[in-house]
Image 1 (cartoon, rainbow, N blue to C red):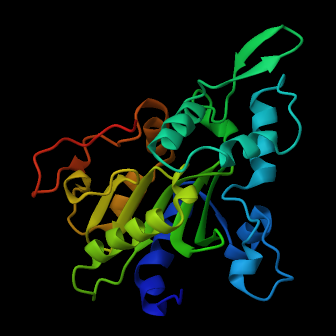
Image 2 (spheres, helix red, strand yellow):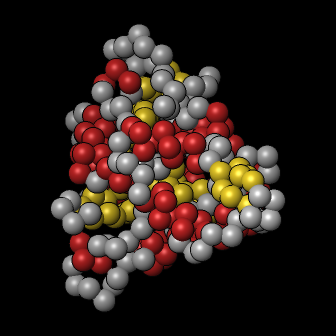
Image 3 (cartoon, rainbow, N blue to C red):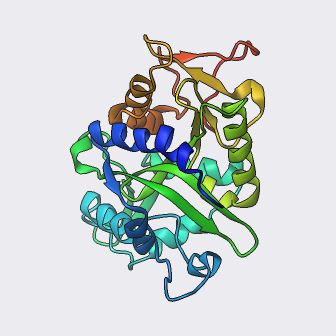
Amino acid sequence: MAVNPGEHKTVQARILAYAQEIGWTYVPRSHAEKRRGFDHSKAMPAEQAAEASPYFDDLLDAQVRKLNPKYAEGPGALVGDLRRLHTDIAGNRDFLAYLRNTKTFYDKGEGRELNLVLIDYVHPENNVFEVTEEFYCHNGKHGTREDVVLLINGIPVLVIECKNATKDEAIALGVDQVRRYQAETPELFVPQMVFTATEAIGFSYGVTWNLIRRNIFNWKHEQKGNLEGKVKSFCDRGHVLVGRRDRGDYRHRGAEQDSRSRREPQELP
């Protein structure tokens, strides 16, 4: 999918800069693809991404062993388990259990199950927060490329779709694009359960497992149209952690319900 230079200049690059200013480490696309296992000896993007992981496998494995000193499964075991989850709401539910550290692993030394910690919510400094762009996936049938993706410990947890403010109904187009991504490459949306769409003025968000209009909401800031304020409040590392640990719906004081609906923001399954 071709990238509109104007779209990148007006929105995507700004979001990447704001994310770095609040503590997310930027990973260039080429580095991200290498860490995901792209085969750049192949000619076509679809071939390069054929065996690629949606995770930064090495970092995820290293972080799991750091946070779980007694974890003794072989390299790749956890990533394999995650990639085998169903690409539907049941998979989202299972993945959320992983993110909330309620899944377990067997410790032979103690002869019992221990909680498997993927993210350290007590000591956030023990986590690795990264942001990358042009996050490409091809599952053999369809290919999609997400504008901006935020990852914690190698796990993609939030996708941001950027549109040019000069386009009519730009945010609606962004949401439609996320719908297409979810339909064509659903494996990406097992870990990516929250999305946002913005054209630099508005900032809509929702859960990727329920993309009907009444369940999409507007994130507001004290200064209307302040993209920097919206990005820095919504993507604040502590805020993202709270969303993953407690509910995942981002029901905070910054949430403003879409005027077309009276429903409250939903929690993740």
